[in-house]
Length: 72
Picture 1 (cartoon, rainbow, N blue to C red):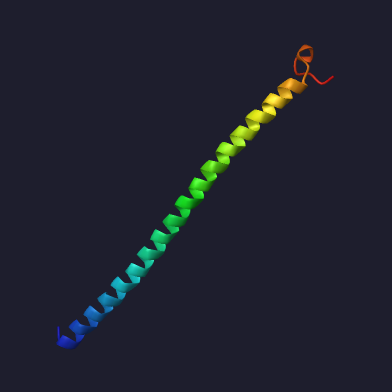
Picture 2 (cartoon, rainbow, N blue to C red; picture 1 turned 90 degrees about the vertical axis):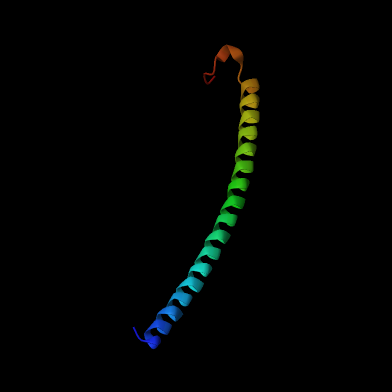
């Protein structure tokens, strides 16, 4: 292998490594964003569960016990 071919291979490998660094940073940023989204979804889920429990409580109070859940 002559020195010119060797130099070309090295240059190509450097370009590949630089491109891989860009890809890795993009992936890290995507993961950071996904973590934030997951945290927001967990908060939202907790709020939905609380709201559902409140609705169930209100419905239980509104439905007369002697109806036993049947429409009047």
